[in-house]
Image 1 (cartoon, rainbow, N blue to C red):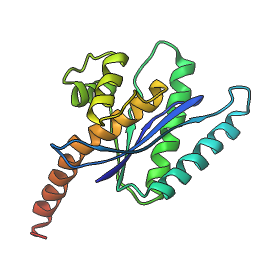
Image 2 (image 1 turned 135 degrees about the vertical axis):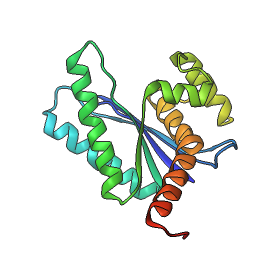
Image 3 (image 1 turned 90 degrees about the vertical axis):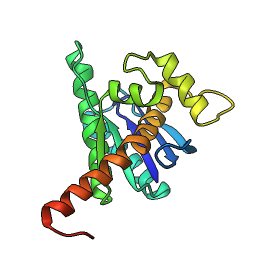
Length: 175
């Protein structure tokens, strides 16, 4: 399964692509950070993010997209930018006809490190180890996006299969 993970942000949006199957190590395909200039108009920043994510989805042909779910922060302005970037990421996946799953930061931390309380350094170290990289992906936005993709391979694949089986059972079919 190939997954494109997105750590949404309006100024820096991390994007990571991995391949793998549940229970096995994943393989790095690529990672990026899409930047927008805070001095630019909001509409132009969102448009740049949309075009960049659409291009990356087209280039890497993922089977699904994993996006970090926006969580409450004290800084409302930061939350708004993150939420807007998240919406653009979800839309880019949906526009391509891909399943899109969102994960909370603690879900990703638990999947990748075994602890929902892991800090940035622990997350980056585990992503580096799990993907067998010579050096940590930089900046942290890229490592976070890769962690989202790994989380989805390990958890989302199983979640999708269970949902499909439940749907088949509900419809009375066995396909």
